[in-house]
Length: 264
Image (cartoon, rainbow, N blue to C red; front, side):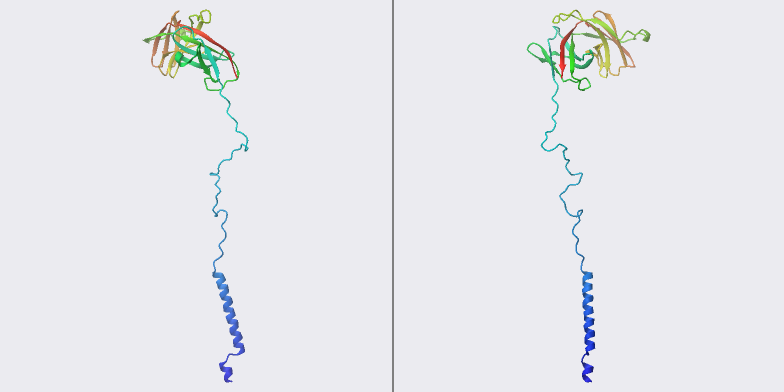
């Protein structure tokens, strides 16, 4: 009886073992719940990468590897040479197409030293473009020009122009000096007065500028009359006043022809 009171019974031992096992199981579960979750491997967005963003990515040339890039077309150069007429003055030279239309003002009131002086002629070049810097089609062209002598300009001052109903025609005919190198007859040209933002000037009827007249800006109209065989009068209007100019020695000009050539 005494042993049964102070010693554990078999039932008590089994109960204690079951309680201890329960505590161990609970501790293992608690430890499993408290242990940190395994760190996931970095995603592709979080992982450091050496690839560039689309904005930073270098552009890829569409040219296949090994194939040469297309080379630029060679510049078009036409050499023009001519013997200037025996007259002191300046040169205006234009390029004309097969229809006789002026397509390029190559030189405007240029001094002789502005051109290349060859052993027996003056030399210049044309790049095959028109006055708008556009390439012209291949074909035949011609270069014609004028050597303009020393014209004399006199500013008459403010004047009253002819009435509108009796305004002179747009051009006047001027007889030029014959060019002895060309054995031509004495040429006759239609002389016109033109104007732009830089002022007024004398030009041929086909728009080749020959001689700067004035630097008056903002002109709204201008016209020319023939005073004599060697002089013309010009009126120019800027909207506020009309001024008259007299140009003498207009016959001191010679025409010359550089011939025909082909643009390829």
